[in-house]
Length: 293
Length: 293
Image (cartoon, each protein chain N blue to C red):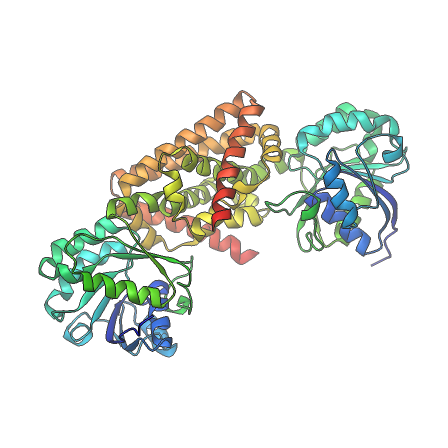
């Protein structure tokens, strides 16, 4: 493996788990000299400085925080990308790569096209498949991306050097890089991530709305804990993701309604054989997936 | 704490995770002299003997395997209780306590009433709240019940010594004992356990039925893994539980359909504020619960 050229300066916009963990590893590897963290929350920036996730902090997107950075990484909730792209446009160095880490990619590319049309060759839409229900700078950790996937969703107007540079940096922190179309990406992650989050929120909301819900919760144990873990995720981030991917999600909601109706009918008919096969097919599907991990 | 009187002989019917872990701890504590394991699966019995979960094995319910045991513990799928109670009736010693570990308690009490009517003072319906998606004798482990809950659901005709004896043994292996009516128990566990299992099976089944499901699964990560963990549970056990608790489950299915419809409407309307509040209420409900654990 040839030596990776270090980055002199990165601006990280949104200093949380995802962006913070990425730059922590780049620093540890000596692959970046200086990180400027930009965040709307000054307390969060304070913590990021204390923990040496970033080297300088700003609550503003301006020449000081943007100009001169070789990479500007957008790691804020996906709904903020249009506004941020619009704001940083006048301050970007001509060769600066703009990349993101958002969970929906059609929306990211749309923001690049609309708000950075002249900068498109340097705009790379990317999504690291790692996370946690924790958030904020204090959640940033070393090694988060080791053996995780990083998806690039090309919009077709990137120059190949920009894509290669982003891939190289993510590979350096341990990720395995893949490419998907943005539409395929959004359909895939609706199914394996966004809809499970939505369903976990919905199920906890059912308990919240139930008059006996609090009594029920006294007896909840590990099954409930794991099934609902992702319902502890950040509501603002997930509001954004669900809205940005609403078409895929609407189809998956309809699909789950359908599945629940099928099980309801089997229960009503007390159709033991059908219920067993249904559960067994699901179990086998999951176990086969798990075996491949 | 006064010394606990050891049990001379226990018959464990169904040598798996739940019953096996209970007797492993009783043995370790010197609270039982001999365990007779009865199971329909000779291989499973073989493994249980090798691992010293049990001291003797039988595939038959007869005088040899039942008579003389002070405790007969039913740890098989809940649908088998009527048949097993009927079969063991002629072989039970007069003072033998019959208890179970099933996840649905109205069905257990119904089996006791119908098939062991003369033995009711010694029949104690119980449910230890611990488990795993693993099953079989090899899944049996020490310490499974430490700081877990054990629910007794009295039917009203037990003698107090039988209940106290069962409570004492479960407390000895680390469980905290509670009492609930069987109807309340079944409503509570439908909400915190059975419905999450059903929903996890249903969601994995949606992926299984989807033409692109296998592609999707290539990108599934920790959120999917935890949300669907309980879909790796044993399909026969869960078919039984769902059928035995179908009324509570039908209501919860309707409730979840309702919740999904609400979210669908918010997405369609792009009602960001409503979606945020909805997710936030769910997040808060789960986090409050988690804080109390």
